[in-house]
Image 1 (cartoon, rainbow, N blue to C red):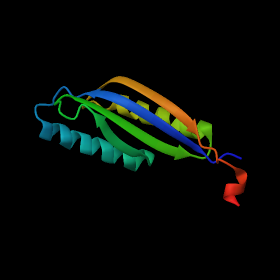
Image 2: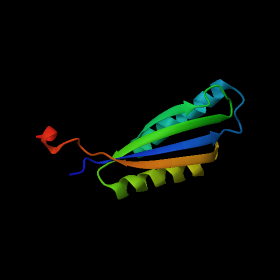
Image 3: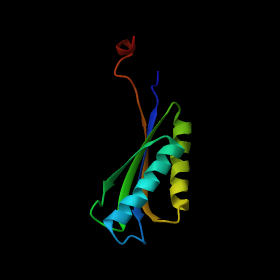
Image 4: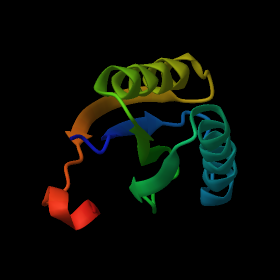
Length: 107
């Protein structure tokens, strides 16, 4: 019996218009809110905090079926690539099956 799937997408972004950390934070806040609203995921900036024009974001989303979760990850990646405010310079994704330790633990 499966308990669902967690999809994880990490993207490295280049913000060519970045001229300050304040501007970067504003752009990332817009981006993170849009991702949460559009894809019902959790998003965090996980690296390059001190750089003006670089950011690494990781997003996680949960689904009941592997195919559905994988498709939502692909949709999020396509949406990110389409945003003209930055360039996606690298990405990685993973799909993790969540299984209970033992069936008796859920009764």
